[in-house]
Each structure stands twice: as structure tokens, then as C-alpha cells.
Image (cartoon, rainbow, N blue to C red; front, side, top):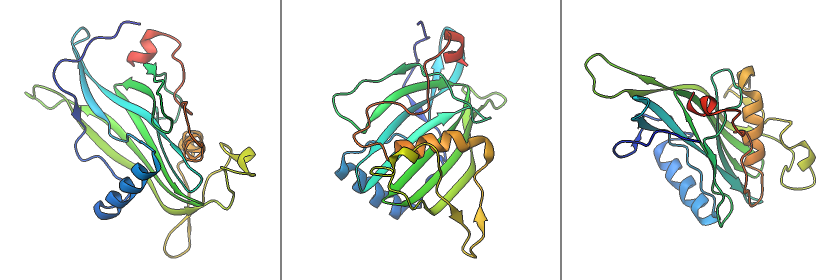
Length: 216
């Protein structure tokens, strides 16, 4: 399946939303490395020379141990599944699973500690400013769920419910926060991924129907 080669180095999107603030993010990243879980939430800008346009590149990735999990996947702006450019087979587990290329996409990220969940949903689009040589990324936060709770152990005896339920999120005043309805399927898949022990496959990106689907 032919895809134009990138020109120049990969460029990460600017001001990418994060699950948590800097200090806590560093502690989370260190704990995930110790557990052997490799999530890649960053979205980068690539340039297709044949099509003469910029595109976004994301990597579905992650997995879980019994105690901790992280998963990153991507969907379109209506929450629908995107076709991957290619799946990735790795020697290890809990790492990269598939690459997606699109002109716009939504990142869905889940971090789990036992039954407590952090969730981030962010939209990425390309913006071409007048007289600018290359497009840049606009990243908009759509939903952030802090310290959500899901009482079931999706890695153990309750795993039949994995991919079917979501954690609950509340404000500091105890009012329920609803996940945007169009993203519930993508988020259920990411929750499943964050509970998938020694994960070696993608949970939401799907095989493309055609090359045009891959190229957006």
C-alpha cells in the first residue's frame, strides 16, 4: 500500500494536552517504565511529498499489568474507528500496536492504577496560517476525567465486562461528569487496553478498507 514518504524530521504537535500536571506526569512515566508499559500519546506532523500535504501521525500503544495500565488510541471526530496505516508486531508486549495517519484525529488516553482511572480525550487538526511554510497542529481538549472509579477488576474475574463499561467521574462537589457520548466506544476500548495484561494487539484502530481510508 503506497504512502508518500516523509520529508524532513518528525515534528511533535505543539502544546499537547496532558493527563496530569508536570510533576505527577513524570512520576507516572517513571512507574510505567518500571512496569514495562510503553504508551505513545504524542501526535506528530508529517509531510507527504507526493500528495503535497501535511498529515498527522499517531501510534496506538500501551497495555497493562495487574496493578497499573495505560492505553492510547485514536478515533475520528465522531468517535468512529480509523483504519491503521500498518499494525506493529513487537518482540515484547505492552508497547506499540499500530500506526494511524490522518488529516485530523482524536486521541483517547487512559491511565489506570488498580480501579482508579485518569482519562483524556483531545482533538488534533492541522492549521495552515497565511504565508506559513508548513501547517501546524491545533490541539483542543474535549474531556478530562480525574480519579474516576470502576469497582470491577477488569484484569481478573470481572474481565468479561472489559470493553463494555466505563469508570465514573465526579466534580469536587460530587456531581457526575458525563463522557461525551460519541466517544464512549473509543473510551471503552482504551479502558480495555489499559486492563489488557501483556497486550500485543490494537483495541480500536482497525484494518483499512482501502488506501484512501489510510490517507484520510
